[in-house]
Each structure stands twice: as C-alpha cells, then as structure tokens.
Length: 364
Image 1 (cartoon, rainbow, N blue to C red):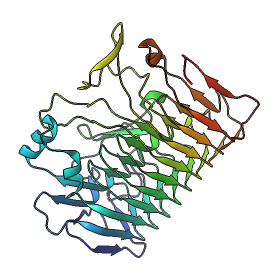
Image 2 (cartoon, helix red, strand yellow):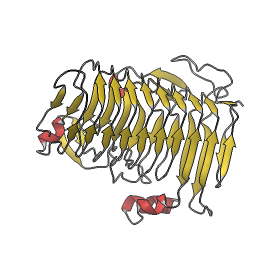
Image 3 (cartoon, one colour):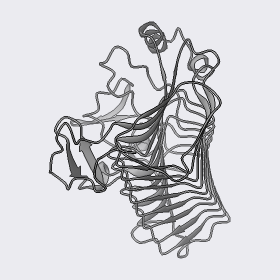
C-alpha cells in the first residue's frame, strides 16, 4: 500500500496487516542525502495515526497493530490527543492538571510482531499524556530520529523483545524536502528517547549501532516556550526500569539525565536557567530513581552515564567498553551549583576491567 495513512479514532480496533507493506514513498529506497523530493514524491507524514480529542466517548483504547510493515514514512506511528486552545492554555498556566488529560487520552495501544523501517523522522512518536503503550517482537531500523520517542507525561509503556538498530543517523527537513546526515555525536539520536516520561519498562530488547546510543532519559527544558500553546514539562523521566537488554556498538548504552551538562542556549527554553558560562546556558535535567539491571553492555564507547539522583545499577555485565568507564557518575554543572549527583547505588555488576567505575564532580 503506497502513501496511505490510516486513522484510528475509536476503541477496540485490531489491524492485522498479515505482513502487508505500507510504503510512505512510491519507491523502496529513500532519496540520498541532499537530493530533494518533489512535493509529489515526498514521504507521507504518517503511516498510522491513533488519536482522540477531548470529546471522545468512549475513550480511544485497546488498539492493536499486528504483523505490519511500515517503510519510508515520516513517522510510521503517532499516538496523540488533540486538545482545544483553552485546554492547552490551562495546561500552561497550571489550572488543568496533566493527570486529567492522561485520564482521557488514548491508552493501551499495542504494536506487535511488526517492522518499521527507514522512517524519515521517528519510527514511533508517542505524544504527550499517552499511557500503557506496548511494543513487543518488533524491529525498528533506520529511523532518521529516535526509533521510539516517549513524550512528556506519558507513563507505563512496556517495550519488550524488540530490536532497535541503525536509528538516529540522519535528519529530514520538511521545508526543503531533503535528507541530511547528522555529522556529530551531539546531533545524532538514540534508539529510545524518554523525555519527561515515567514508570516505563524497557526489557529484553536488542540495541545495536544507533547514532548516539541505546536508551536516553531526560527532561527537555520546555523548548519552544515562545509558542503560547506549549505547556511546561513539569516532571522528569523518573522510576523507569531498564532490564535484561543487550546493548552493543553504541556511543553510550544508557544515559540518565542526558542534558544535565549540555549547552541549551539555542533551545529557547522556558525552564529557569540554573547555570551560565559565557554564552552557554544550562537547565536542570530530571531523571531520578531509575533502575538499570541485568543488561549486557558489550563493546560500546561508554557504558552507563548517570547525571541525576537515585539511580540503581545492579547485575549488569560489561564487556570491552572502549573509551570510558563502564559506569560514570558525574555532572560538572550540578557541581558548579553545589548540588552534585547523589544516592547512586552500584552493586553486583561484572565490569569490563577492574575498578572501571568513575565518580566525578563530587558525585556519589
């Protein structure tokens, strides 16, 4: 099926594709870097849209995509709730609670035994407030951005028994209709991005050769706050479980609070700035009380980086960590404001070489 978009806006829907291929282009191969698509040949923005609005009754829930193959879309799947201007303003000023929107947003959306290949943006984009999303036995390969993005105030996703490979190496400009390589490590993306999303479980997956890493947890700094309809990210990426996965050939396998020491001067942040050095601006990243256990972390440049509090790291095995420590607990910015990373628990791990754990900047 070429250049088709499916919209699911009601509960209790199962789509069994029987291994049919949905192609966002009219060709199998994406354009090479720098070669523009025409308006007629540009990738279809979405493969499947699962969505509701505030008036949906019954709530959109129990939607399953099974045995599907999505090739060359912008985002193969987006799950979202469409909100009125008044609701968006209420979320911004705090008169409406995020939990109230979670209670009516789509829930229990499942992707099972499927393939998502060469998306021009994300493989799967989970917009804000979505709960109980489930991916199992699925391969997501070659997405320009992250394979899966878990947006703010999403909760209780289960991502298991799946493969994430070769994502995060390119960018697609919807204005010029061109693809470009992400040439340096800060611009490349990870297999799974957990952005102000909590209580998720990432279990028994394979992460291999993604652009910047395997699983990154962070809270963005309320980007694009100049838009009056954007709401702050009030909560961090907390209480997530990353267990039983296999990471190899990554820049960093797992990074807790990935933006803690990152200059965000160009991000038009709405959060209060906590530290400035010349023109560089830094904001408080939040990713607390996460558990990383029983993972195999083999032949990555770095193993686990920790830049926020309360992380538990146990029973992981490290082999052949290439450039840095297996476990690295630090934050230069946090140390500069006399609030170093603390309460990290490290126990029963098998290291790639003796004592390959590093605490820096007063971290503990």
